[in-house]
Length: 197
Image (cartoon, rainbow, N blue to C red):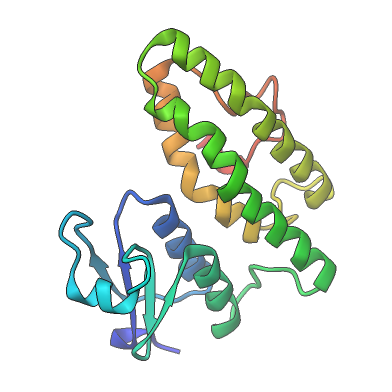
């Protein structure tokens, strides 16, 4: 199906949530959609009418109908377009991947976010230390979910990989500025392959 003007993505280019939706669209071969960059300081009427409850990005508009919240959008994209599956077909595996994707947003990112905002070296050290248990949990999940393969989805990128993928550029940038390595290969040998690039 040609995307054309029937598919629009309202986004903000540095948002990890928008990045994950873009990754899902690429995985499904949805090209030629209209991307609308939003100024979150001066939200457009289109954004406010498409997501009146929260007024935030991303919003995927397909055939005039808005879909909000990045993980919901990724699931929608997986179901609406043909192409490689993003979520597993097995109900148990689907529930497990949904759990870990929610963990990334609800626990992993919030544990790391204070580090991103910290300024003093002592504050950074403490917040970095506090983020490590969340990384350890993800390392264990990768071990379980991947069956020894490189991605949470096994041989190929799956739902949890997409959920985490939006954050990787932010993590690498903060690591470079702060001189840290949150996803240290010595401590976390199973870290996501995308982090290595």
